[in-house]
Image (cartoon, rainbow, N blue to C red; front, top):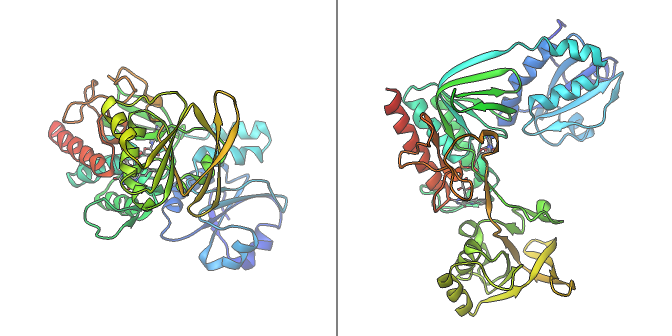
Length: 428
Ligand SMILES: Cc1cc2nc3c(=O)[nH]c(=O)nc-3n(C[C@H](O)[C@H](O)[C@H](O)COP(=O)(O)OP(=O)(O)OC[C@H]3O[C@@H](n4cnc5c(N)ncnc54)[C@H](O)[C@@H]3O)c2cc1C
């Protein structure tokens, strides 16, 4: 095998090729697997750099299922690392970043050699008409329109493309699908459409040194993407409470979107965390479905506008637990959640049992890496005009990261459409 090449093995070669000694990285891949496609070029690039010292192998998971199961590999891609016939701690799977693999490989090498090999990384420059940061519905839609208009378009995502939709259990309000659609499938269709249109993807990328004036960004430490226009489509993230059980049960008992999930709580009991405008307005919406809502709020009064407050107080289905804060979530079964709340006056705790929990303590726009001279609103969202143009020439913002009243898939795709058409005209 030539240094730097990736060698494909089958299960019956595992003992000899992997356990036979030396330093080895083994990639369990599958076909029709977007994260595997995202990994392929990174794996090849790293094989060219580290391939003299570490053997790069790959194995088709579906065709070698028994071995995969025996090694505890349950998803593709999964990278396993070996030294001297021994499997090393830790494996990588899902949307794997180039830097994660490089770090693991370097841990297997003497530091001096690792440093020497790092110098072999050669910088690359990729030119394009439009660089889109964020591959959620807003960025993907802009990409589809631009690529179809023959604009060279690169979509960069720090994760795998799809955005929030990819993690949404069911989407029932996106036009064109009479039955609720699995969010992952909707985002997959959008990504495939963008790929077919000719969009170039850089998925699970390390994004650094974003220069909005020059319209350049550094990816994975070696690739500079240089563009004529930039679209910021990085979305927003629900502000987490940061308490035990929240991460584990996100999307499985804990929701951050009433428009999306309230309908699943017809005749059920629900706990709502928060007391600002969105918490109260969303509670009024949830109350159309739920039998009973308990709003848990840290202050003695609601922070929402007076009209929303009045409607909430008048609603017989809504109860309030003021001066209480959630401390932990436990999921006993599907539709059976327990919320531990603390009374902020006497610090006593008690458990609330409900079918589901909604958390509305705000969203945070994903703007950190490009904290520049962009005009932003008081909450940090990027302000645009109606063509999605920001305060910086040639820089657009679309979707949830933009300052706007309603954040849904349809409003994100609409923003993406508008920006793409405006850019097509600008660059014509
Ligand atoms: C739990 C939940 C359920 C929802 N359900 C529905 C629903 O049923 N129907 C509906 O219409 N709406 C729903 N929404 C709202 C909807 O998901 C959003 O409005 C929509 O996804 C916004 O699209 P976007 O492309 O602007 O952002 P996102 O979907 O958030 O995508 C942003 C993308 O940018 C990437 N990114 C972040 N930072 C960077 C960076 N620095 N560089 C590069 N990439 C970056 C992220 O990885 C992500 O892929 C839901 C929201 C939540 C939170």
